[in-house]
Length: 448
Image (cartoon, rainbow, N blue to C red):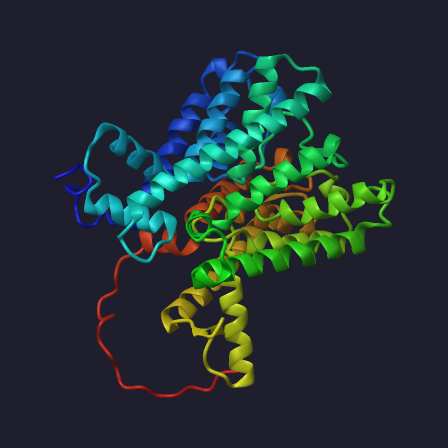
């Protein structure tokens, strides 16, 4: 019997997953507080180390200190390790270790992997983990080579520096983290198709979800062979990318602080990137704090939706958003069911989607309310910051470094809840209420 299977019953897979993320954050905080993690050689303040570790493990990208100038090479190395662990999940690494050492992957471990990856059954989970590791190596390795060459040539870096820059940003992009060591994200590369498109596709593939990537690989991309989940993820993702690009281009093309001074190629690339990165990467190629109010609010909506289940991104997820919207339209039109591709979604899935939306809205409203009391910033900037933290995005309108200790703690909790999922966190913290199995007689109440 494995150590995981011998754990007490109260330690459910959901709780163990939450505790796993928490443990990695604690370890990351301690490492970042060591003197050799900073350029100054002095220990980082506890709250800043905790915020950075949480942002890295939760693959968010919000920073209270400049990653390029505050953290030393060793500090940056700790951050990228935390990003990789947080992006793929602790159980992915635990299972990989078990496969290498020949240890059996037990039932409880499989349950935790199922919880982490969002799979529906226990069969094929070990094979999925193998594919996750293979896909990660392929995507991050390819991205590291391309970005390393691009940064090395434009910044006159040494071979080691170019390799590290390429690897850091490739991992950060594929894990949808948004951390950068360039100093100003990708603003110097707004018109560079090589950098913009490479980072964009790393973000997209990382955010699709490993189940979808495996489905595409196994079925060689044949649409009729793909699962309903994969079809839904791909359609919603494509729609959001196209709509996002068009909306950003239309709203910002005459903004002198963002797109107005760019060539047509630069405008298209920047608009495309600005529709990709809120889902949920956090890199930016134009000044986020200079966006029009309408564009900033649109970006908030994209950040709230986020990436797809089982991937490296956050947010309520594309499938959750689609299910909730279709449920509302179905209710309004009197259909009663949520249908897609000639299939009906189970009632339990629909109720779960609505629950996630409501819990997420409650978290965002609560965090925003607290920050409006503790911080001296505009409502839009605060709302943008909170949704960015919840969606584990990392985009900011510049108020992160100025947050109070209370504000930082609120965002730490928000980032953590956004990464593990508001429903998973609520389930981990709650106990089953007495009498929940009792079915009482029905009686109607008036609603609406």
